[in-house]
Image (tube, rainbow, N blue to C red; front, side, top):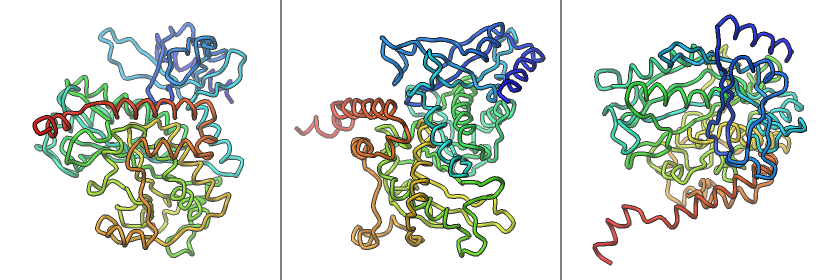
Length: 443
């Protein structure tokens, strides 16, 4: 199969008159990395991979062990939208990273997700996800000055970004990425483009592509797009609500026609796994200091560890069942944000859910009341815990988590924790504008 896919890539590259191929991969923080090869090197790359120096990539190798091999995945071949005035055709492929001896590299986030998906496959499951990635358009990257004062689902003339969203969707579709919904979000100049659900590895690749395409289209229009979780004080932040389900063959393992919520025991145990391990995986799905400016009560962000069907103040929501749509039965995990590393985020979410299934976790009843309106005493009586209030708190929980260590692998886990501790320390010693405005005049 791999040989057939490689042959198909070579054939398509010839038919499309491709001149260059960009090889993509990510570091542990989810930043996209790439290098470009001329099409003459494509066959060699598909057969043997291409060597590169990994010593300067965050979370990759040390200088004394820096040689890495990037082997392109032929199933990810796509033609990039043309931006070169000369009309040069460039293809792209995502890569898996290997050691020089041919063994998978432990520091590759794509490899970490592959390992988690292999574990799911051994249990008979295919993991599907459908993330909703929100973002903002600003006039430039220097200040958060928006393009419009629109709100949820607003249309022109108040929504100045209609053309940007249209061009972004067209670019994604040309690259083979299906889009379901496009709309203005709640905050001024905030937007959302929802991708059609797919298997988790393909979706992680698609999410990385999506973030780059959104930014590049914005740049062509002379504006700046950001996936920063909370760029505006007093407004909703950007989330990445992640819809997810497990299938066995063509059957949705989450669906039970006889259950009042149409949830199988598998789905209930999966949800219980997400809720039980939410605090320890939080630093991975919300991985920046700024992420915790979004995860506060009052801005539609999920803070409280509970589940429901209609209640969007809960951490996990189960969308209502539509008759005849058993395949759409899913759970929505609402605390991730779009600035996370999708490979690691999907890996830890899956690990938490599978843990619930394997250990037979019991799921408590849904919480349909507005948790934001509950008193602390009422929440405590109901046993409703909160997510970590800061990255420092979150990473301290992650550091003790065997589940996250297993989902990431030792190498990524240790590098990720070390990087986040440095980020927390840098933030802790920073003197902010708020502190100067509040304290300098009076102390």
